[in-house]
Length: 622
Image (spheres, helix red, strand yellow):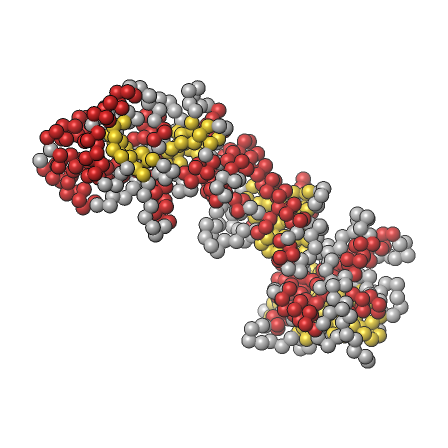
């Protein structure tokens, strides 16, 4: 029998395809099952238009057989089969795909569903096989043929005695090596696992004879075999959403994504238009323990007509929605030959954009109509939404800022920026916030005191990323967002000239205090405080809270430009003025203690606690 060479490609190209394009050897079974499904699709489609072809959908199937002794895996279908010419055309020419040709010929007919559109899928079999045998009989032919190849030295075609239409592909597995264990593909559990993972939603039953054990009447372990259907056939996302119970959604989610808690929200998508796709998105009921670690991988499971293309397609989700889990299935996506090909797909980009809009719309709906559920989701994943604004320097703020929630000093609950603006005082032109470890600690900050006194609402920010987020937003509905501890946040305009004169008259004293502290950019009297003696404010973009966060993350020390402000109406003000006249050394000591006190209130570290402790003890002892 004459050996034939592959028509268009060399041994080098085939070797490149086998060893480079498919990096995951498991994929071979997915590809061969998809090809079998295509062949059955073609037959069933023809039966709908040709009355001479008698086919019942329930009789169409794919059958897998294992033979450990011969080291073979067999995938058999009862589809349309191939003629000798088709075997030579489809298998003898790399990248020649019968499915692609069939689809082109019928592209205007809507009731056709062909999975495989790359001619290279079949050749993934050579990743695990020394020899591949393809025996096929076409529906319209009385003859059958056997195609044999080792993947390198070409192929042979000879007559066979197959009686029924369809195709049988037999793989002779390679011998095991130190790096690759090919024998595990001969285990039933492994085949079940691969079918479940990649081909669970092929629309025809994938069957295999499976071994089972049970105890007989004598309590003896008896082995028996029976035919099992390995796949689920119809994916949940293809079902009518109105007929799916919540329990069914929850069970699917918990099993599919190995979660022990039910999802907080479910988005079922059936989209038709420029791009057609189905999918189900889930917002987890709890934060994965790896979520804020490098180990966490975002992405949705991506399918093409029920065949898994990628377990975690990160391109389908923006980082700020990375907490969403789910599946997307589109007939417009081809089974990719590489990750790069998929990433460049216009179809994928359109789907990703639509998915992002669906998630955003659902979150907005929950925020407006089911606040308790939204707050639970926000408590789990709100930080990620804030990172979404901060990471892109505010580029995505228009998308995300209305999803943010912050604790309100007035409402004593979580509110949106829009809700804050809707009840601003008539003379108020800024949105005010304060930062701290907890809302209780923020509520006691000296800088917040005057705002509460005058009835101004303050947003209490407790996440480390909050202030960075606010600075990225900059302003909301033409209202500048300002930290109450910044110089521009003083809302007390009463006796402004009196305050300026007080600072001017005590300029030398304040300079002495600044030099004694040596860590502040300025010391001055203020009228922004009610009962507290001192507070810290900041000049510039970095606040004391940001200083604390940045220093926790960076090896380089970062200092905010802090200002020590002294309450002009507190008795300490008169005490300092007296000390400047009578005891400048003690004034310096007071300055250091007051600054340390202000830092403690802000939750900042004291650089010289021993010195401050000694000063306090000496002052008490006098």
